[in-house]
Length: 133
Image 1: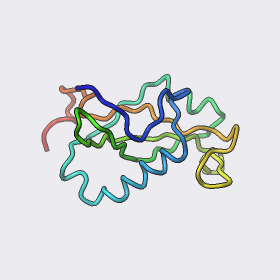
Image 2 (image 1 turned 90 degrees about the horizontal axis):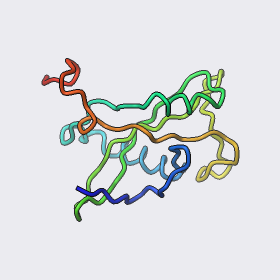
Image 3 (image 1 turned 90 degrees about the vertical axis):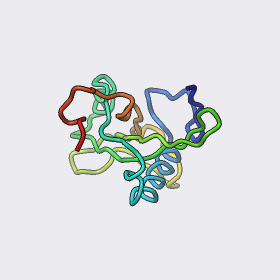
Image 4 (image 1 turned 120 degrees about the vertical axis):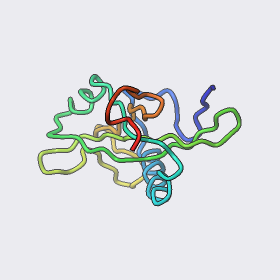
């Protein structure tokens, strides 16, 4: 099954996505979440440690995760892939991203990282957290 991106420009530098993409994914999640999980099986996200270290290397005191949904075409069918978008958070609890126009990130203002892999697909089948209800 070959995935073809629909709303993500590729390749991404340092696993980052644009503010426009992040806003689209987050908006789609908020619009769909009231009934999304009754039709989809997302249980968890795998986050590579190296990529998480990259997000906090910018001097963050912590990170914040936003939930989103990427729309893709797979074998001619529209599918939705759950996303966890990570941003650095400063010591005052503010996201370390800046955007004057609300559409694009200002230069040097941090990044929005998309490196998570949803479960199912990337799961531990033996985990007690991944079992049936």
